[in-house]
Image (cartoon, rainbow, N blue to C red; front, side):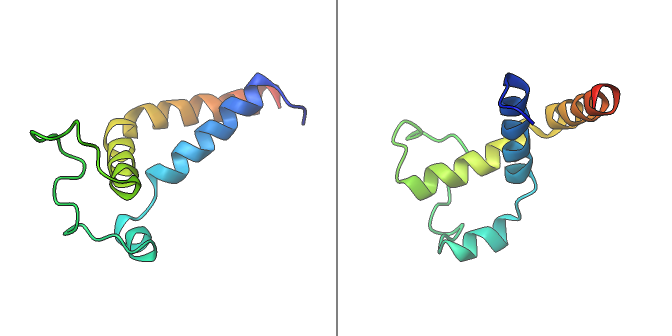
Length: 88
């Protein structure tokens, strides 16, 4: 398997899939982040421009990928599977 644009796209798709199926409670307990520490994470409030720390940004990224990318990920996965079946 050579290094190509398709390989980069497939790697990105696998990473987004990994974030999408991530169990929030199990993952957050390993990095010592609690939902109570960041009650507004994942939702837009008055202070959404004050992004907070890296942990809060990671939590927001996980929640947004799970909500926004659910349906497009299904379509991208089907297209990738069909492409691999047809062209090997």
